[in-house]
Length: 424
Image 1 (cartoon, rainbow, N blue to C red):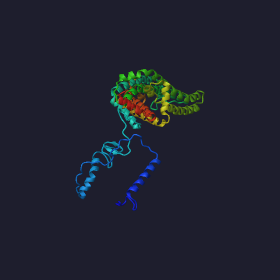
Image 2 (tube, rainbow, N blue to C red):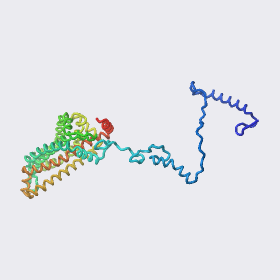
Image 3 (cartoon, one colour):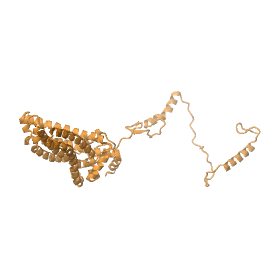
Image 4 (cartoon, rainbow, N blue to C red):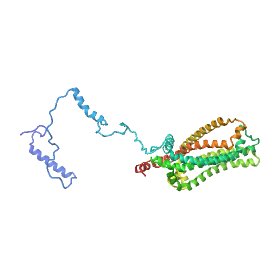
């Protein structure tokens, strides 16, 4: 008997143990449910070992040669941009600027003036300025036309409606002596301010109607002319006119309701109480008007880009602003501050030029000269220059803020990226 250690036990023959093993295997296969298919491949040599080419004889390596041989594959993977334990060409994490960045998001596509992702306030300002710089011909033509038209009307209003401003001027005007005269002077002054504010709002909305088209093309990186912007905005100008009338009238109505009670009390003889009610009502009306202005501040780009009606655009603006009122208010406040700063700089330059040329003093002569046609024309020129610079920024910021709100709420960036890729 030739027993092999580790395979058979003493006292049993190999044939007996093989028969028992075959019987046990057949019984186990009968008891175990089978999952094999009925059709099997033909029998053959299915061994995993394969005869390859003869291996070269091993060479004994020294300690330094062995270390270099072990580090060579890893060095090759590092030179190929990979990491140890990583296949050549495989990237670990997000790859950017030739080096791996662990867990960092990929850069958003930017076919135009802004990246297609949620924007910060500085990026909105930068996008508006970049639009004005890239498409300066179309932007300059539109803003200059709007600025000259609105400022011409504002100059005439300032020349005609200067009584209240002169009476309230502390440098040489007539100071009201009674509360009733003060109320009348305030009414005249507020009337002129209201007309100027209304003209400014009309100019801003009119400019935004045309400049929104340019901004929408600039976001996709496409050129546009003033004629193309006019052709695209012309079907919506009637609805834009309705929006220009409805929103300012709504805000003026809020102010009228706020101050009418004080004016009625002053007219009835209770002058002190009337002045107090007028001040409190005006303050409350300012708060409500500011809330409504921010609520409907995105109505113009919604009307132009979504081709909606006046009331639908106002509802759309209210929906986009809901939950982000303070953020929209902050960005609109930045736009107002930029506009005011540029306007003050332009007015200061005109004032220095006027003093240098005419040598106007600070007495009654300066007050009188401030309301003549020559001075009003100079002030109007300064206003036109400032409007040419500020209208594109204000309108561009409003349009980009509208797109940013849609990106945050409706994933507009995906649609814009697809449109930019398809060239629509």
